[in-house]
Image (tube, rainbow, N blue to C red; front, side):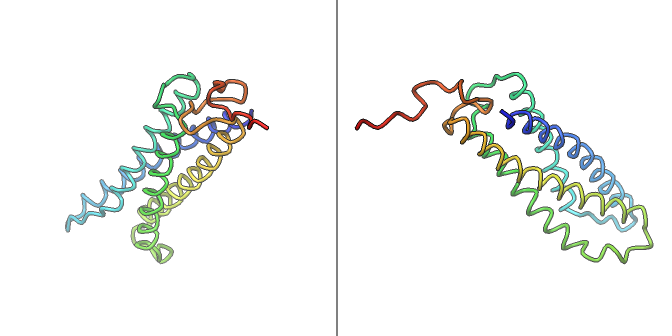
Length: 171
């Protein structure tokens, strides 16, 4: 089917964008700590932590999908729970960060930091959108494969064990 390669590509994109976000947020945190007044933006650290979690989970999903291994960790249930948790983390952090820097267009004094903030916003929202697609595609894969919630995330239509398929109703 087309679902497994699509999920692999989207998870690979998350890995790349999460690495970029880790670098951008680390740069922003380093900048804020170097200021004489020593201010700190906890929401930047939140996006950093979410990006690290997203990186690790998407890397694990790539290994599980490509290797077709994983036992109960590789179930659709665990996959979708993790996708949803990361989706919520990105949504909340992005909303707060977007609100905090709503008027970033007026930023001229620290032009480099304005570009960093804009890039953080862009890549964080992109990752959130990819996780939205991953949730939908994972559920669609599960439905088209006829898999149960606790079946492996790499299941295909012909691979589902007979006891997990729907049984015909006796007439």
